[in-house]
Amino acid sequence: MKLLIKQRVFSWTDTYDVYDEYDEPKYFVKAEMFRLTHQIHIYDRNRNEIGMIKQRFFTLMPTFDIEINGQPFGSIEKKFTFFKPKYNLDYNGWRCEGDFMSWNYSVYEACSMVAQISKKLFRWGDTYVIDYADPRNEILVLMLAIAIDAANCTQNNN
Image (cartoon, rainbow, N blue to C red; front, side):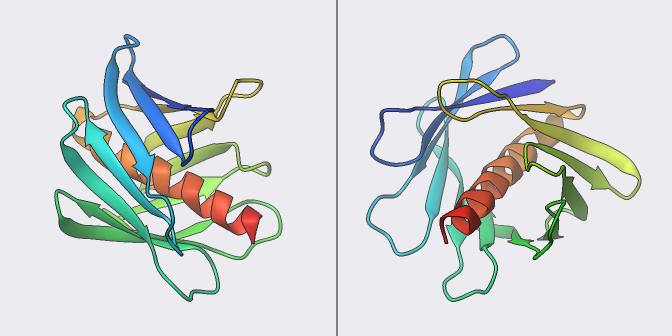
């Protein structure tokens, strides 16, 4: 199964449209404006909020808490590394590793791959593809992909 995340280029805040593998709109992602830290909301196609990603204030490395349906679900913290991006995940028992350029990520549960997150190059705005096998992980993987993007953008802007 696949999700395609496309950034809206002409928007005041980070805004993304998320499409399923048939190119049908499935989710909508919007960051809040005028905040000291990132706060990102994820909505279904009917504009019902399904989750939120909130950046912690006063942390050395970018750290985000993830809520799903109003309940705390986990967190992600970007580790300090020189070459391959790595993250401390307290999120569904998963771990995540990225490639050298921070464009591709693999998400694992124990030794099994849960998802592959890939950035598409030479696109108008950021575009990501999420490949995952288990449909029960769709929202979890989407939330993680958005949090990883926020962690990378936050660190690059500091």
